[in-house]
Length: 96
Image (cartoon, rainbow, N blue to C red; front, side, top):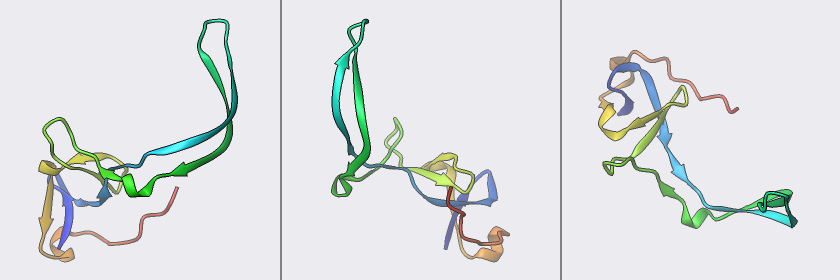
């Protein structure tokens, strides 16, 4: 069974949209002339994987990401019986 977009069965759903909290390391800060803090980032982050959550839209429906990187809501995806029905050449997504 494969998830695809309802409006185009040739477009595969690659996964869910996730929110993963993190902390970006800083070495310090200065206050700019406008009163806003200007942070000095160290270039690394600590990711809190245990707090990862699937994102939902305003209606509470899960959000997915298709093979083109577009967000798709749960009510806009369809579960197909097999790959032949979807008419998709299945391949691994190349990483950016």
